[in-house]
Image (tube, rainbow, N blue to C red; front, side, top):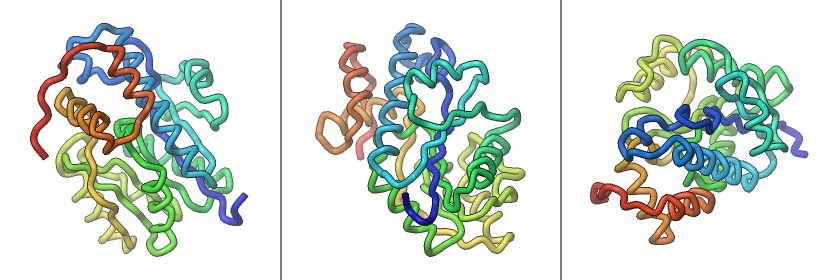
Length: 231
């Protein structure tokens, strides 16, 4: 156990039929059970990276609030808590505060839309928190796929236009105004829609991205994906 307790907080929708990854389901025309299996694979790969990063407690904050048993079956070794009500900022802020209240001194938050995240990236985020008060993982769509803090910073989550291309810039502006030093990691992509999934599948096929549960789930789907934009 390291002298400084660390927490990796995963914000997760339970992989219930028709509840998680609804945009992906709509764009691909997947059945409820198919999207549930794919969402579960995303979560499993995210947790695998968290475990491989080591040295950090894993906290999963989930929705809906009656899905604890579903999450417990997938992740029996993590701290489970239902997400609070409110927008994404309120939910992340509450999850961060809970980890600090539990005695952690460094907290990194991710979602399940980057199943290809590497354990080394998570370790880099904690390393960055030794040099700055905040670390952000910019997403190519203008948001962010990771945020880490040394202390609660509720102002970073206030008044942000969530699910828009302005999320990252608004967060950086709030960091500047509040005097919060910030380091950015390399940009990455979220898997939100069909083209994102096609890009992920191409990276897996080339051996560039590692997400074993998702690779198996994609193979089981047995259908063609839309062409991914060239990179």
